Length: 382
Image (spheres, rainbow, N blue to C red):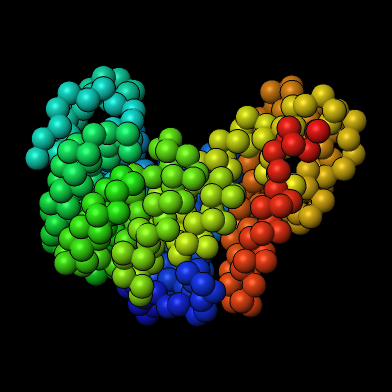
């Protein structure tokens, strides 16, 4: 591809537990803390790849489960891999499919081999194991491959959480072995392990120790943002990132809301992904520095101001709230597209501000100001 390293993580500055740095890979450099827009089915919904890049994204996420079902990993491979298929030439991280198997599918069997399930699309039966998950990610041409794990709710009984964590660590070893046997792909890609253990500090510590013994390029904190609430999530993040290697990237999966991201960065997280900016855009919600805004609200029908006066994105510098209100209320597809584009810019601008604040040693001040200004719609209307 290029003479860039396969995978190299450099920390440039720290501020408390927070870090800012870079991940260098064959297809490009990713500045951290980084937010990855979600391209579930080989598309960041409603936005062209060039516009995703223009917003500032340096890496996106693809989904093993969805792509294995449609159009199929083997088909994507025959068509040249996910990058060429969707027109994105920078790094792609693919999740393992474990979360979607647990949350979307009609499960029929879960055992040491993997999970056998029925597709949510057509009811066909499939088996996803650590080896098959890694094979699919290799066929897609993923730059950062995720180990296959078993996710259980944080409300599960302790013995269920412990058993799932232990099985996830066995699957992590099988994932690592499958990745290492991948030939040329393994020579150009990276693999991350996923820490599990719900909200239990001892289980999380045991999981981290097992993953470190196996050895990965980066480490994800998994099993959070699944309904436990921000306070419980932050309680876990007060100790979980510190159990992982300081010289490797730490990725919090499926997070999240802007205030979640700011708090997680303060606790040492380097990478994030979430469907919120795209999903919210499609439903008429915009993220702004003063909080989320529902453009469907009648009060915006004649509002000539931009979505967010502090935003320099093409949407805010071109169209009014009144026009966006009209598009969304009329069901015009352009409304969803423009709202999504703005949200992607908002998230990337937030990450750039966090990186700058860490580098300048003023993260606490920035985070406190952000939280003070970022209020809900109901709070602003009071």
